[in-house]
Amino acid sequence: MPDLLETPETTVTDLPPGGMILLRGSLADAAFAEVLTGCGISVPGTRQIVPCTVGQVGWMSPDELLVFCEATASADLALRLDAALSGQHALVLRVDDMRARFRIAGPGARVALAKLCPVDMARIAPAELRRTRLAQIPAAFWTENGADFDLVCFRSVAGYARNVLTRAARHTQGIVLP
Amino acid sequence: MLTLTCPYCGLQADETELHGGGEAHLTRFGPDSSDDEFEAYLFLRQNPRGVHAERWRHVYGCGKWFHALRDTTTLQVFGTYPAQTLTPPADLLKAAGVEPAA
Image (cartoon, rainbow over all chains, first blue to last red; front, side, top):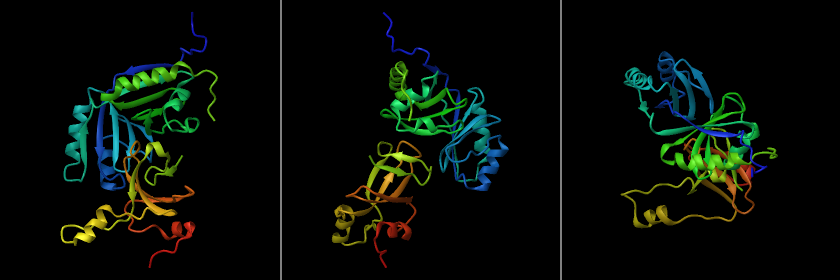
């Protein structure tokens, strides 16, 4: 007998994580930003995730960016960035295998995340990258269309993230975010 | 529930996103100090009932340390400010009704 409260239209799927490059340096430094722009990476504003020619780039902290690109392009891009940033106080690290990526899609995506994160989910707008606590683990999520969310967390806790997200997405009907 | 605004990401971060770091604005006493000074630096804290400057880390967010001035009795938060600050800002102290140390 089907559970009438279940809302299977909200789904949690594993995405291939793709290429990811960690960039550290002073984002306020014009020379640093200039090198990044030259490599096709724009510098996003505080807590923003913006598209760029290589993919997307997200603001992680005042001295850290996370570049999302094609898995096949990351090795080349990391080498290019490393060479371009030589002599500057900066770090380029290829972290393709560091994080797992999920997509929470469907009408209950916001409610599912609101159950797990101390975040005012009703106010999360597209292009905001929110690093927060997902139940007991750190995670970051963003939305492109305002409805479906992409989430990254460390790969070592991906199983936990999948479990809590799937469980939270199961019953979302009738819950209204304040 | 304590909610502090992280001065680096501008978020109103919930207490569960943060990690407390104890009393702020300690003066470090290193190898050349006396035993009494070193003991005071390591172990002796104000622990006041009232206005208190504290260190906090936005551990589930940007990962940065910052300072907060709050009242430990009423839990009123007067404000947060960057970690690269040696004393609480005068405007926060005024809001807390505390005379800035000369």
